[in-house]
Amino acid sequence: MGFFQKLVNKARIKSPFVFHFNSGSCNGCDIEIIAALMPRIDIERFGMKLVGSPRHADIMLVTGPVSHQIAPRLKRIYDQMAEPKFVVAVGSCACSGGAFRGGYATLGGVDQVIPVSAYIPGCAPKPSAIAYGAYKLLEHLSEVWDLVESTPIEKVPIRKHTRKADFLPHDRDPDEDDMELRPDSVIQDLFAPDGDESKNRPVIPEDDPTMGTRKESKKDD
Image (cartoon, rainbow, N blue to C red; front, side, top):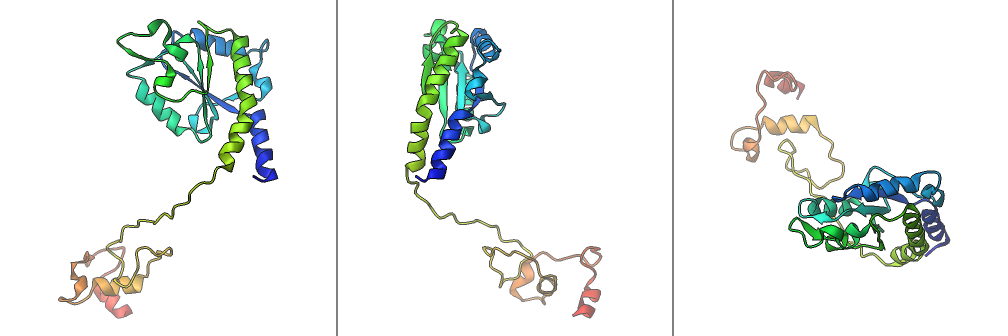
């Protein structure tokens, strides 16, 4: 790993983006997260910043037990996060199901659906506990990011699948990068005599204002 990448990983620790997801809590833990953002605790002094989209987040804070209805949505949001990504279960409900564990409508904790990197128990956890758990997670982010960046990734060639348009001549390759149209050759191919292999191509009406009439096209030829 080069020096520049190590510098980037170090900068990530100073400014991780956090996304909050409520999977069905009583809002007790959510209020404590808001309290952790207030000036008395000020969790943003560690560089954390709440974002409104999981696509921009490095860490996801999850509160509440996971119900059968919310489980696929939680998995979908987790998949939208870019690698490397981390999940923090905040509160007893998110850690193990809490008071709702064993209920007919819940699956249990967050780790029943997605992997969890850190647990912050409590009903509800104090704002200082949330800040401490987040800070301890930041201490391990540098090692994890270094490991992810140093892991070789197998590169697989991707073939571009381009649908061959009906108006392209037969000598045109649909996989070519420069898919520019050639009006002269297109018109000649469309107006080919009967018996030619291009007779199955779409025929432009004589009064089509976009391509002109057949007589005008023949004069141009």
